[in-house]
Length: 235
Image (cartoon, rainbow, N blue to C red):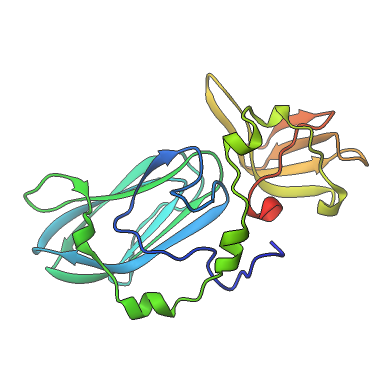
């Protein structure tokens, strides 16, 4: 984090639509995998007045604000899920904001609607607008984005955390509070979203992960087995 200017966004760009299906690698060429947040702002063009169903799918959470009011709030850790809100909208432009955050594991975000008398669809690019001067006024940090090292299954050699021999370095103190992906099995991903990684020995080769959400010990190891990834560690 010392390399990042936290007063400015890590990346600034214009998306034609919010259609990013659930996946396990980097989020839509952003170089980000876990522990990040996205904020989309602009204007939603409503073609005709009537009742609209707005559908938001996300992993992890999302918060939708339309016309300055929070219409849907599902921030928090969860797998890819959908929430729907029905709104009476007048034809014209409506200020729009969507905050999406990813904690760990897969990531994805899709915004669709069902207009009155029509079928459901991802909200098309023709219904999203923004004022160029508003976009140009946002200051971001292109140097941080350009220098950030992308971590994928290819660059880390595949496998899961048990194949790593990285230790919990003393520079992080006796514990780290972070989301921890432990492993996959036939029951799915074992993720401690509010994990506490506790160093048990001076060298940091022995540690445990305690999940404060479920009040369980989620993992333990004796001879390394940790891989520190994400902006706080490899950014």
